[in-house]
Image 1 (cartoon, rainbow, N blue to C red):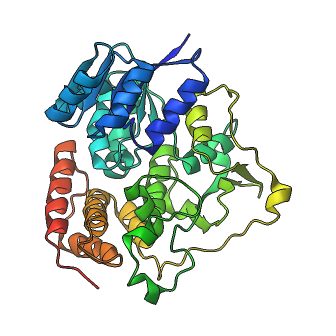
Image 2: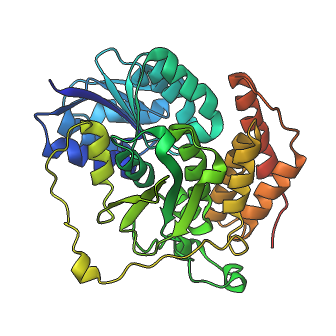
Length: 384
């Protein structure tokens, strides 16, 4: 039977790669819903190609333009209500959660409660509300399959293994655009330089997070919730080639690694087809041509966002939510030219220092902490 997919964030990098996988296997996958922000041109192209019965856009104006420009009748909804409707569409059995940022949490929870299998690329859902998301998934009997390349690698390395045999997990990091830059040079780093990721093609926010290593910090928190491992058994290694996507060390000293070329279609397809593996038109790994692989410990002094994420993850409660919200706002301010690159970490620190944490927050308390942190970060005067 075909797997019937809804893609939340279909016009972004993960969404477009997911559609490429669908195009390669039309006999296995069918698009029954798409959701995006305001990229009308790309959504119209997707609608005319995949002909989904339902589309959601961020605004009424964008929704109306998509409806008018589509080559066949399609129902187009909009706003938060439209996004939630798309996530719960009865015709679907699988939701790809690929929205960027904290706005992915409500529709991800809605999809879980509606009994959909989740392909998770929105790491912020677990950073903000990991305990709630995993509890709801367990209650609904829903599987959450990781799409991020690092978590997909861990998931694959754990196939057939007992949880008790795992000693630690090792997330690899490319190091981002500034991995070899001295701290002093980072003071003058520009938006254009931050967006020059050496290995991966990603959206602007994720690429800046990669440059600050905050993206790896968010992934550490995500790994904690996905695999139930304490933070002192989750490590990070900088691996510039991005060939080993992550590793698992077992109690007997064996280390399993998942390798491949840097191509997001591989983990996306694995999440969609699991437990099967399907053919994929992708570049094959040639280790002889690569010749050498390199690794080094992350530099917490040059890139303190990674340590901030570890500390907030260990503390738990509302701190990861506040950290994530402050980072989203700070990155946006950097991308708009309002603050320098190193102000991102200062804004996050300032907001965290002002926050009074709640240890076991409800969902409403998480959203209130998120709202407060965004306002605080927007008005933060932090600069370097």
